[in-house]
Structure formats: structure tokens, C-alpha cells
Amino acid sequence: MSNAEHFEVELTDVYHYRLSYGGQSPFFRGLEQGQLIASRCAQCGFVWLPLRPICSKCYEEAAPLQLSGGGEILTSIVLPEAPAHLKALDAQVASALVKPDGSDTCIKAFVVSKSGRFARGTRVSACFLAEIRTIADFYFIPEEDD
Image (cartoon, rainbow, N blue to C red):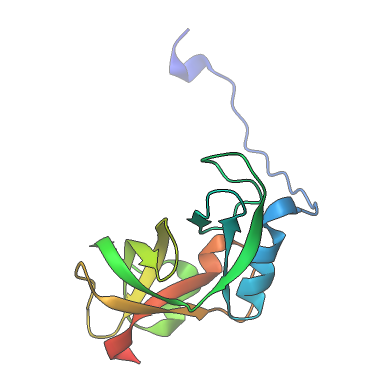
């Protein structure tokens, strides 16, 4: 059967549902309050960001831990266009791996910079959008852009 013979129609479905972040809720509550909330394993002491309720190294419980919000860029790639939710900031945006201060992990996040500073080792600070719904609703800015 050729593609011309396929019967196709366009349909639009809209689903309304409530999503729970479950054990990661403290992380998202922290974003609402302008804080980065990680978790520290009670057994091995490993610090996870984003927060994990159970340590992935030793499978023990991990407790929430507030971080400073500072960090360092490990690697980044400048995006050709800012994501829709960050366009109003009128600055260059990179997708980056950032190692937050006090964390043993890194997090993939946006870095927004008017000066174009995205190099490895650049010190950054967390910033938070007014409405938090997803992990993409916070970003980092270079400390020199403050």
C-alpha cells in the first residue's frame, strides 16, 4: 500500500490531569521558594540534585538538604534560540551541566547570560521563574551577570 492510499485525519485531544511529583516534591517546593533542595543519603552521605528520596548508590533513605544556589558550569552548548519560557529575559541561553555547590552530582539546566559567559568553570547562581511547574522553571545566571 502506498502512502497516498493511507487514510489519515488530524485529531486534537486535550487531557486535564493532576500530576504528583511524589517523593521529589520537596525539590519542587524548594523551587517555589527560590531554593535548590537536594537530598543527602543517611547511610553513605552522597548528595543528590535533583533530590532523590532513596539513594541510588546504597538504597538507603535520603533526607532533604538545602543548597546555596551557587555552582559551576561543567560544560555547555549555546542554543540558537531561547526556549519560549525564557525569551522574555532577552539574553543568550545555553543548555549546560552545572555542578551545584554542596552536591555530588551535576544537573542539566539552562544558563541565561546577557554577557555570553558559558565557559567551563564559570560560577553561576540559581534563579527561579514566578510559576514553578517543571524542572525547567529555574535556570542559572553567571555571577558576573548579577
